[in-house]
Length: 307
Ligand SMILES: Nc1ncnc2c1ncn2[C@@H]1O[C@H](COP(=O)(O)OP(=O)(O)O)[C@@H](O)[C@H]1O
Ligand SMILES: Cc1ncc(C[n+]2csc(CCOP(=O)(O)OP(=O)(O)O)c2C)c(N)n1
Ligand SMILES: [Mg+2]
Ligand SMILES: [Mg+2]
Ligand SMILES: [Mg+2]
Image (cartoon, rainbow, N blue to C red):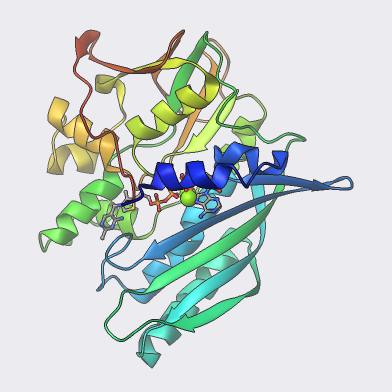
């Protein structure tokens, strides 16, 4: 079986234009004449990214929000999008999806300008996709690769809520509502991303897991990264439901579905957005973890990988 990173390695030999950013970023940055566009695409697959009985309007929201999140990571303002839809043999489902899609697009300021519609064989999972186009807020949108060895590593919001929401739904629970909403209706940090683009040296959104995504930022920047897991920000509902011990923090930091912004910035700089410092960079490569300053082992699984 081909894994996701191995497949992207194969594609890298084709995607050699600088606008592809080495297929090592949240989005492509394409300049034609003097106009720059930020372009990104994420897919959602039933049973992989959402649960079969998630409300269709929530699935539409998630499709828009996860793509808006990649625009946010590059400090881009949402402009327009194209969607890919697989028909579900359920007219009510499709109608509810479209209604939810309109609300989500309006909320994010995205125009729907096209797409494609297909069917999947009976009984097969729904597959949805969206290609989002944004306008940059700075001439060169931040990449994942600009972290400096002297930088701190910061994250917005709280981590683990989406994973906790999924875990609750998988065990038949629908409370706390904040955790369920974090899973079904993640919020793209558009305004935070635009503000961070002005000061951060590297920015990405956290979709696969804080640890795997931090390791990617470090590798792209040619550095090693260290994270103190005790500093990973957890929400009150996460702490009440899952806990705040080392195991809970590892679950939060590897679960993914966060859609927070992870960024490298001067450790002493005034930050334009609320964020928690969770670590920093060193020369070398790889990820090292501590718990309140005491070194701890790195878990085998740092986050989500397809394949
Ligand atoms: N099938 C594909 N074709 C072309 N590029 C791809 C494909 N899959 C992933 N990529 C590229 O690989 C990089 C990493 O993708 P991904 O990990 O999905 O980013 P993100 O987590 O920000 O959505 C991006 O530059 C993305 O455009
Ligand atoms: C039913 C279900 N099982 C598991 C997950 C967890 N999960 C699936 S894919 C994924 C990572 C994010 O998806 P991906 O396609 O890698 O998005 P990208 O990183 O490209 O933005 C996570 C955390 C989920 N969201 N839903
Ligand atoms: Mg991303
Ligand atoms: Mg992606
Ligand atoms: Mg993404």
